[in-house]
Length: 423
Image 1 (cartoon, one colour):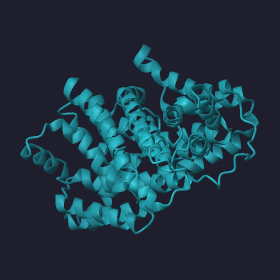
Image 2: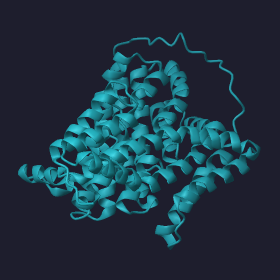
Image 3: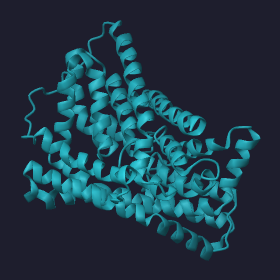
Image 4: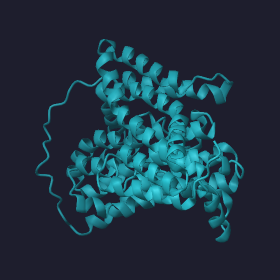
């Protein structure tokens, strides 16, 4: 297809999509509308614009297929109570003295084994509130801790953002997950350091935080054993690791559902598989639909001169060319307030240019880390889901955004230093 869209058209299309998302128009429709406007303004004409949009959407279908099947594992972890059990076990081992570490680690591990970031926060939030009441810690510090854990977990997870980046860079999902390990650990450490400092600063004010609306005696459903809870996601990760370890390629399309089924068997809940699978599909459908819309606008941006112009800007500023990877991830995730959409657009658009400068796995790691810096902006779901989970007013949640950004920036800075400078 010999069509080239102007950078102005691509930027205008992206701006239209952002404005519509902020106006609370359905994000997938917002991106389709933005793609259409971008193509028309960019000089592709109606027929050419539609063709580019369709080609863009077709290009991410393999990633969408893998994302849909990953919903099986997510559904089992959430609905069976396995996610709650894993979180409770981690917190019980570390205890209240290391409360902030335990909360961050629990959120990180839940996200890392395949639970959506916002769902991981929602899962750990009730436990965090109980702990917060016992140690007299504010919801502000508690949510900062959960957000840091979620961001650290996202860069090592088999979640949609990682799947999309791995697919578009042509690297193994397991390799990309392992590439995020060092940034994730650094992110976790700094989360605990920063949040501990904030908590100590609060304690000097001698304020007693109000948790009067918290019911400590909420009834809990019977949770599965820890072994049964952890075996499914653990098996899925082991299967994904077989290729880099011994050359046996088990696609995520197989590894994630297989781990879920084994987990169900170990928990003795195989008779509930229809219910759990349906729940998981329901969780993934909005993401899949979002990514179809994302594919249309990524097609417009990929067909434009935007990539080349961004490289020219970096050169004019005398910045290293490898910075295209983290910068593109940060910008696209900020535009969509979604790490999944941001990873998809950025990797589809810039993978070819990035791999001219650094190895594919390095570029994918830096870009992927960049998508978690600004993915919790108010026009996205994570912002509102996290505020609701902690019963936090929107104004208070807005105050937390700088902390979100700092924690995300630490992770992407670590990734950039490791994979852009040293390796």
